[in-house]
Image 1 (tube, rainbow, N blue to C red):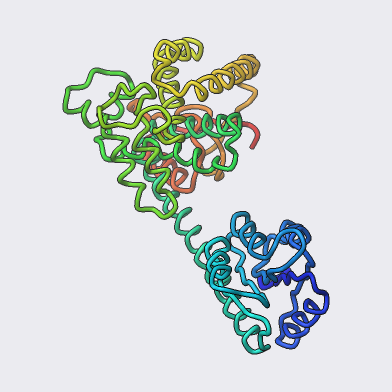
Image 2 (cartoon, helix red, strand yellow; image 1 turned 180 degrees about the vertical axis):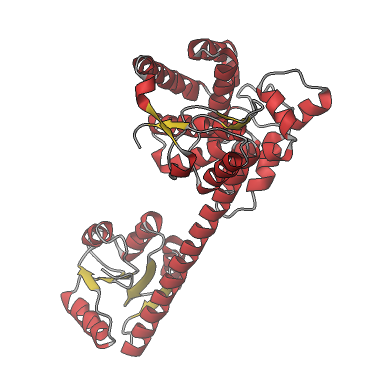
Length: 392
């Protein structure tokens, strides 16, 4: 089925045949017909690339306005046209407001007018899909650049972001938020992007838990706001920028006076608060059980539903981890840097000859990271081999 497929809906078979004939004579070949709303919705469900729907108003069961309103809610990219023999101002306003129509046509409608409306509708559909494709490429490209910058400038923070992304993915599933999973994962991955604005030595000391002077502490506290500033101008990432900016807000309102509390905190920000605090505690204590018990001591700071669900996830991950410990070395293999491939996952930190972290374990190899490792190796700053998960 091409992207120019058209669905005609009318309870009168003669009308459907007449409209189909007009379109066929106008070189429109991808035409489907339905005699009621239920049949039309079934066709739409099994035709994901349907471009345009033309519906009569008076039909048994759902009328045309109700049908097009449902199409608008479930498949907003489908262009919607209402064709009716009875119309008044009140009905027209209802149709436009509820169905967000592209065209409102009155029977009898000339072939020329009908075909012109269809052509205009299909052009609009092409514009929508072209804009979406461009936006998607711009979005994915922007994200890739930001993540690559984070990986190069702060490998420790990038490793943390990768762990947070894994937590976020699992938690989204357990919270039945699969429809928002991409936002939750991306928010976790970009939650620490603001760290690129802070000198690397300060970030490393902060991650190691060393004491910082007041001016340095203020810098680390601004990471969420800096992250929000970096993200907010990227199309479709407004919700993610907001969540990143509010990631430190406590459910009980123990941060700043003007910060949102409880359910007023964006849902994704509430998720970030739990997984970020847990990850930092695990890194500090080295014990998942102690880390979660510490969260419970401060449980008023977290959304209770998210915290309870996260507890179940931690218990599951802990059982999986204990199963893997005995065979950890069987799960990795050594690899020459030139042989690294995109998507491979490091199982050990890559350290230079001065003991400085270059790339953290659990980091996924990207083209930028591979290029960085090759350059370090060629300058004799690091030695081979590196270690990756043996699934590759």
